[in-house]
Amino acid sequence: MKNLLVMKFGGTSMGSAERIKVASRLARAALEMRPVAVVVSAMAKVTDLLLDTLRRAEAGDMDSVEKNCTALAERHLAACGELLSGPALDEAVKEVEELVAEFSRIAQGIRMLGERPPRSMDEAVAIGERLSALMMAAHLNKKGVRSKAVNAREVIVTDSVFGNATPLMEQTRERANRVLRPLIEENVLPVVTGFNGATQDGRPTTLGRGGSDFSASILAAALDASELWIWTDVDGIMTADPRLVPDPAVLAEVTYREAAELAYNGAKVLHPRTLAPLVERQIPVWSKNSFAPEKPGTKIVPEVMAPPGPRAVTSMAGVALVSVEPASAEISGTRIMGRALDALGATSAEVLAMTSSSYRQSFCFLVRRDELPRAIEALEAALSLEIAHGYLKPIEVNDQVGLLAVVGEGMRGTPGLAGRIFTAISREKVNVIAIAQGSSELTIAIVVSREGLDKAVRAVHAECKMGELARRG
Ligand code: ASP
Ligand code: MG
Image (tube, rainbow, N blue to C red):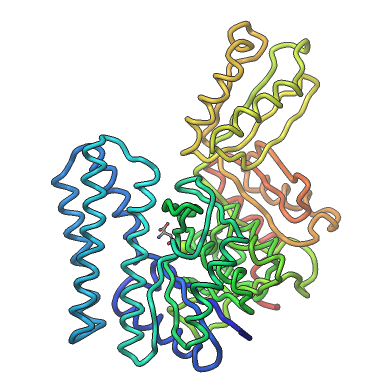
């Protein structure tokens, strides 16, 4: 199968009947040129609603559960009413009602248990994508395009880390070729649910919040697609968040590595794990705006022609800096660091940046604020003896910080760059608290005071002329 295009529509691109019509039109236009497979998110905010409902079920608040289920059904039935008519509408209404009933049964089960088993959670939250996939496929059929909704549970095989699973690519490739390829070859457009998968023995999993991008790249790699287009509600990958800087620009092209660093450091356009499956086969990705499909968007490719240097800046406010400091030089800082990292590794808290210094080998690292309690608990348990005996100072937390990341291929080879960046930040009287360049030559991560974060982003964006350079192309 030559020239296969995988298209992924995000939550806002699927957010209403109107948006689903646009998405269908974009898929149809592409289908006139080449074979296509579609991956969809749940309608905007539906996953949040499902998660909220399950939390309330656990707490025994069944009035809210019922209200939420009604809202869920109404939103999808209203969209079906606008997208479909006749027997196709009747069929879709029945399927929506069945899926909502399935969700409600899981919520009842959670209430009875008084807890939320991760596996039931994954089965339940994937219903958002099953609802949107069925509507889009039905609408395409109505428009004369043969189409079929496919539950990714039949295709994407994962490990059993519920809530944040990782695909097993060999098995997934085999399933994709067995389940999806024949459909595409018979001119049936598959509309696959994003976000979910299943273990080898069929237990439902999900790929983490925002994981539909990842689903699409997994399927693009598994099917040897020639391109992946990710449809969102912004014009592409920008030099900075337009809410923070006055003159950001869309980057015409970025490398896989730049896009991954930007996503990892807080840019919201892509799920951070999206690019990994594509690198080996060098499948290019386009990030495009379904609200302005005529705009070119950003192309993500293995290499770019642009001159080396900083190209974009991202920031994250919801982070905290944790410091561990030996109280005396008698204790091996390296060994403490090793144990601390081990303890963190056993939690799912991610270390976003880390630095160490001084003869006492104190070190500090950055975690997401919502992962902080877990991280601290693990650290204090692992180092309790040293802390109790006074070899280590009490662990210190500073949650009044923010992370800023400057990203660009070949940055390390640009003399004087770090100096310019720090001068620009200090000119704004923003305090730099920690710096991590690590071994990645394309990112400088800088921890600053939270109140100075936005100012620092503006200063770096202006100093490096990111907007201007991107506009010049
Ligand atoms: N619907 C899921 C979420 O909101 C996955 C996605 O949209 O990418 O996290
Ligand atoms: Mg998304």
